[in-house]
Image 1 (spheres, rainbow, N blue to C red):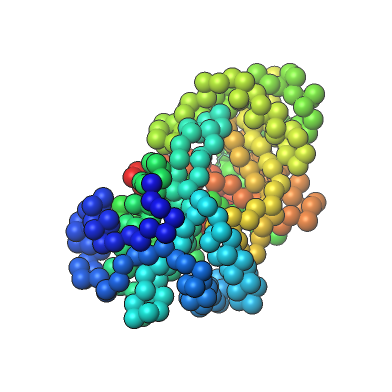
Image 2: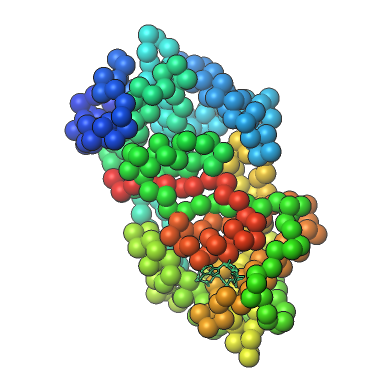
Length: 368
Ligand SMILES: CC(C)(COP(=O)(O)OP(=O)(O)OC[C@H]1O[C@@H](n2cnc3c(N)ncnc32)[C@H](O)[C@@H]1OP(=O)(O)O)[C@@H](O)C(=O)NCCC(=O)NCCS
C-alpha cells in the first residue's frame, strides 16, 4: 500500500507496466518531458482547478446541449476537485513541468457491490484526466494512466476503469490503443425527442403493458419475472464473464424484483398466454457522479433489467415496454430516459439504436 503522500517515480511506473509496448502502440516520442508523477498537495489545487476549467469550458462550447454552461461548470468542478482531494479513497495525480501543472488525473477506488448478477470486486476508476494543450501528444496521458494503474494495483484493485463521453471525439481511440476495452455504453434519449414513429417492424402483439407499482401485486407474476432475470443474468455472464455472474441466489433475485415496485421504481411486464413474456424496470433517480457531474441532466428515468423470453423475441415486446416508460416519463418533470448496454450485446444495442437512444458515454476498462 502506498503512503498517503508517496511520490510515484519513473521506476515505480516502469516496474509494473510494459511502457515500451504502449508507447510503440501510441507512436509518441519515448522521451517524456521531465518530471515525475506526484500526488497533489493542497498547494497544487489552484493550478489543477485552472487547468480543469480551461478544458471544461472548451467542452461546454462543443457540446452545449448536454454540458452545463461554462459559468456553472467552473463552480461544480471546484467543488468536485476539493471533494476528491478530501476523499481518502481518491487521489489526484499530477505532472509538473517548469513548476506549472501540465497534467493531472483523478483516481478513486471502490468496492463493486455484488448484486444478483454482478460479482464482488475492488475497482479503481480514473475519474478524470487532463493534459494541457501545449503538452499533449508527448506521452504524458499514458504516463498518468500507468500511475493510475499502479495506484489501483497497490490498493488491491483488480480492474482499472474509466468513462469517456462520446462528444469528446478521439478520446475513445486513445484509450483503446492503450489496451482499455469498452465494457458498456450509457445511452440516453430526451422524452421530447422520442419519435412516435419508432416501432419495430415486427411489432405484432396487442397484449398491453402491465405496470406493477406495489409489492403485493407481484404475487402471481413473481415466478415469471424471476425466470426472465435468471435468463438475463446468464446472457450478461456470457458476454462479460469477468464481472457478471449467472444469478444463483434466488433470494437476491426476488429482492431486486421487489425493489422494482418501491416508489420511485415501476416494474413493467407483458403477459402472453398467461406467462410473463417480457419485463423491465424503471427507476427515477438523481445522480451526481464523476461521470455526470458536469452534465445538465441529473434526474433520469433509468431502465434496467430488460428481458424478453426467447420464444417471444423480435416481436416488438422490448420496444413496447420502453415506449411505455416514455409515456410515463412524459407525465413527469423528468425529461430524459437512460439505460446501459453491454458492448457485446449487439441485439440489445440494435433495439435501443432503433428506438433513437444515443450513446452518451462508454465505460472502458482493463484487468490490472
Ligand atoms: C435485447 C432484447 C431485450 C430485445 O427484445 P425484443 O422484444 O426481441 O426486441 P424488439 O422486437 O422490440 O426489437 C426491436 C428492434 O431491435 C433490433 N433487434 C432486436 N433483436 C435483434 C437481433 N437478434 N438481431 C438484430 N437486431 C435485433 C431490431 O432492429 C428490431 O427491430 P425489427 O425486428 O423491426 O428489425 C431481447 O433480445 C432479450 O431479452 N435479450 C436477452 C436479454 C438482454 O440482452 N437484455 C438487454 C439487457 S441491456
